[in-house]
Amino acid sequence: MESYMSLILYGIGGILVAGLALLVAFQEKLVYIPVLPGLTKSYPITPARLRLIYEDVWLRSSDGVRLHSWFIKLFPDCRGPTLLFFQENAGNIAHRLEMIRVMLQRLQCNVFMLSYRGYGASDGYPSQLGIINDAQAALDHLSQRTDIDTDKIVVFGRSLGGAVGAALTKNNNDKVAALILENTFTSILDMAGVLFPLLKWFLGGPGTKGPKILNFLVRSPWCTIDAIGQVKQPVLFLSGLQDEMIPPSHMQMLYAKAAARNRRCQFVEFPTGMHMDTWLVEGDLYWKTIKQFLEQHLPKKKETESSQNGHGNSPFFPNELSPDDIW
Image 1 (tube, helix red, strand yellow):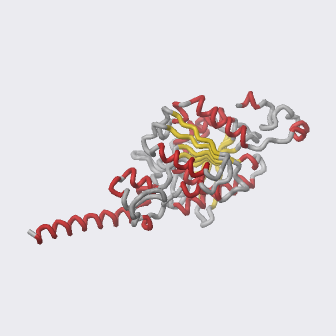
Image 2: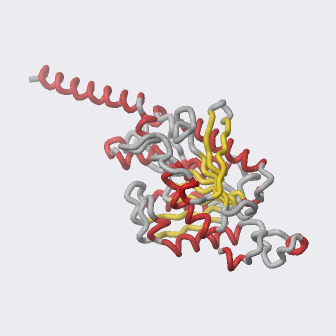
Image 3: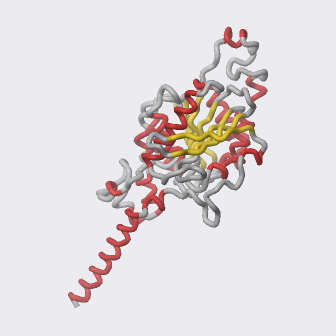
C-alpha cells in the first residue's frame, strides 16, 4: 500500500512540476494577447475609416525595436491636451478606435496611440521591460513635437495600459502633466491568484499572505501598486464596479496607496461599468469626470499671452472656442 501511495504522490508531484515548467516557459503567452481569437494580428480598420485626422508614426525603442503608432488630432492645429493612450491587453489599437473617436469629440484633445511591441504593426515580442521602453519612446517623441502643447501631455491607461502608464509617469515627472488609470490591477502577481486560485498562496504582491515562493519566476510582474505610490502628478482613478476581469478592490488599493503620498488624487466609481465598456455605459458622467479633472489640473495659459494670440476668452485651450463650448 505504501509503494502504491508513493507512486500516486510522485505522479501528482511530477504533474505539478511539469505544469509549473510550462507556466514559466510560456508565461508571456498567458500575460500578453496581441491577437484576439479568430482574428489576425493586422489592423481591421484605420482612423481613416472613421474620418479622423491622423498620421502614422514609426518609432524606435531604446533596444532598436521598430514600433508603430497613430497620432490622431481633433483638427490640424489643435493644441489642447494630448492624451498618450495605453490600451488593454487583448487585441491592438484598431480595436479601440471607436472609443478614441468619442474621446476626441468629448474632450477636445489629441490622442497618441502606441502599438506595443508584438502588437499590431510593431515588431518584436512583448515583455515588461520592452513595453516600458516602448512607452518611453512614445513619450519622448511627443515631448519633442512642436505642433502640440507639451505641457499638456496626459497619460491614459486602461487595464494593462494602466500598469504601463503608472510605470512611465513615475519616471517622467517633468514630461507628464497628469495620469488617468481605468480598471487597472495592483499587479500581475495578484491577478495570478484571481485567475488561478490555487496559485494565490505561492504568488502575490506586497499585501498578500503566504510565502510567495514563486514570485521570482514571473518575468512580467507589473507591480502597479509600487509604481503608483511614486507618482507625484495628479491621478484620476476610474473604476467600473461591474468589472468582470479585475476585481474593483484592486483600483481601491491603488488609490489608497497613491493618496497616502499624493493629495492630487481622485477616485470615481461607476456602478454599471464593466472592464471594457465603462466609457460607453456611463456616458456623460464618465466624460464629464475626465473633463473636470483635466480642467482642474492642466496648466492654463496666462491671460496676457492668450490675449496677444487673439484667444483672450480661452486660456485653457488656444482656439476660437471657449472652454464651455469645447468641453
